[in-house]
Image (cartoon, rainbow, N blue to C red; front, side):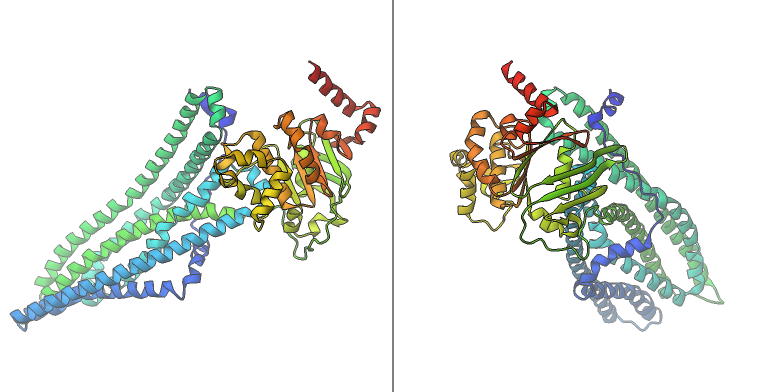
Length: 605
């Protein structure tokens, strides 16, 4: 069953590859650049608290061993002196605790600001990417980048970066103090460091690859989950629940196993540190006892106690550095995927000297336009067309003939492979993209309804519209009647995709949205396909209001919609086969006439 489910085409997702790159310090610096806006505010406070806590921590063993116990060894300390020393040690620990609390508080605040900025930049960048980007990726995989991958950087920024600095400062301080107290003992203890470093470096590539695999598995899981929720009606209609659950179980198991493998790789580091710590303690006791008894270069008891403190402290930051390194590997795996999106360039974007669009009349001309979604699939072949300003043009043709491609190019969702598209005599590539999009409104067959109120959805194309404007637009297209019958009228809350509304009601809302936006060019892509005949008759007057004075392009199959067009273009395999008025095309007895006759025959049967 498992193999069968995997081979189902509806369960196929683009396979993301593990990014094979060495640890990239430039990329780490690029990631740390997000801290730069806070370099003069939050970061200095955090670093000061970190340095204070580290300095106090390093001072405590010196005070206890070299000073306090040293005074006892020399017979210079009395009972009250020891109480005073103990109070000082307690005070130092309290100061260390307060400094650490403040460090953690400010670091968490800094980390949250950085995560906020990264997610905002990533989302804003995705908003401006071209349609090709979304053609090649599922919604679920994009969600994983914006949510999961950004979240995985949280530990790195809230703890990892400052902990890394603190532990490095701590290690340097300990090493300097150890060699100052006893170079011989320090050399003997630290000889195990190269061995530990050699073993731990062998794990780095495996750990990094493991976390990248986790991200890929999570992306695939999220993609399937998103698809399953969106397509639940289809799944239930075809009784495919068991098959869907089996596939989810397979993807979920792969994700679980990848997490198990990654955590197993992480867990290998700590035993090495603990073994090194135990070995260091054994060396300290053995060689330290020898030096204490030595006649040539004796070690005092106070120095030995301080040494014991520092050796115990030494392995703690080593262990934390291993954890921070693992956080860094997780963060780098995620940052690679985030920067992959941030480095994605729009296929369609403004030129530096792009012109503002003013006084739009709405004439659109295609000159020798060729377009292909990929090299093997040409969608348009040398198209020459003129969409007259203020007129309605219908595009007719079989599925895949190039109708939707033409309107997509008109909105500059894509740029032609070759040829030129002119708006009022100016190449679309020379006009600001925002102005082109503001001049065009879409009414689609599958209308997207956003979570919010009915009024919010109509207002979407024109955020500054008043309630009176919204109601007037709804009335003009015949949507007012059904809206007022809803529980809260125009303030009725609808969920994503408008599940409480019928297909026809959603389309009426899209008409109202388009009318309110008041575009110069209006595109209706099978806009009345899901509206019953009675409802269609009701909105004919609304459509006339909607189309009046605008350049309109209608993709339609209904005769009632097509015959009202000023001009009809018939497409086949990406080429213009016929064009003219309804009557002219009927008289030609060509493809269009055959199309109309087949509709009549279908209605009579």
